Length: 193
Image 1 (cartoon, rainbow, N blue to C red):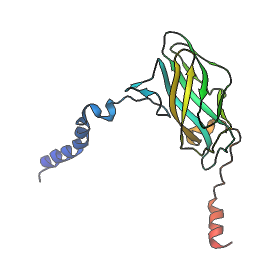
Image 2 (image 1 turned 180 degrees about the vertical axis):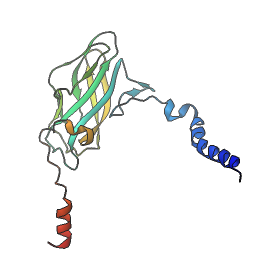
Image 3 (image 1 turned 180 degrees about the horizontal axis):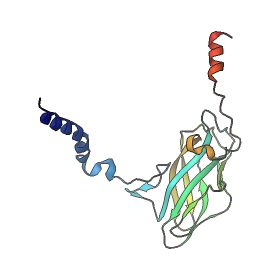
């Protein structure tokens, strides 16, 4: 085969996946609404946000990887909320049906067209009296109650306190993760010493 044929064959081989993606039409992943958050939250009726409320990040902070938040314990909720309405609003309550009681430190002011982080410098939303233990990886349904926008349901993940989340304070009452064996301890155990 000549080098020209090799070039044409290689180009066709490399272009196939790209062209296949173009053939997906209006249902392609790249044509779907996308909310860049930890939760698959607030994509309703094919668009991002609802009633002027957008939540680009939302999660419940769980335990360290390999540990648990005990039943009866607490879990902080972290939200980044943007009110795109022309008037200010407030987050006045959160309900975590079947998971525990949610305590807000105070109503959270949401100025118009400004992002508000409910977890900085300390979490302002806490699920207390967990009805079941949480280990991370679960999803929980929260109903966010806004003074003007009404009730906005979201489903948020329980994120383990690992990787970029290690900087967050540990949830109150979280059990520590089991210790990881060191290579020297593992080798000593395997050799019978």
